[in-house]
Image (cartoon, rainbow, N blue to C red; front, side, top):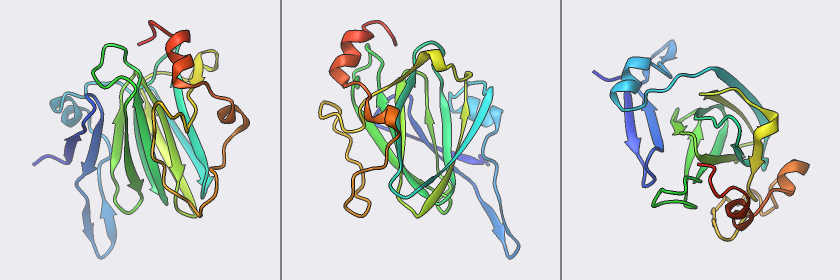
Length: 189
């Protein structure tokens, strides 16, 4: 019996992953990653770095990508709830510039795999959330890039959190548009 359900999305390469949860009166147990099972689903990647963040309601982190050392990411919320988004930046993809989003929470235990060649971001919809991600390459600050969270050409439909604007870092307030991305990085992915 497989310990994971791998759900493909309308964008090739993106997967929502549902682990099998074994629970009883003591609590629960689940595997969050198992190399052979991921390989059998066509996800043969090697993770080299784990990250964790904690954010409050309304915080939006993204949409980030790496130019020098692109990272594939296996992400999940271990506390609270987030709306997680990936934007296809692969030039030869039929879904170039399209986005897909999924709700990840400690309760639903879903994971989201975003391969190299995507921008990634999430918005916290619960009071607080802790978010963890496994990465296929090391973070390189010299190759950090990002797109505007509200770029109209991409059109991400973010959840409304109390009717307020998202809480962004200064860096994320100044990210480039998708049109600027296409002009600046004609051969990136």
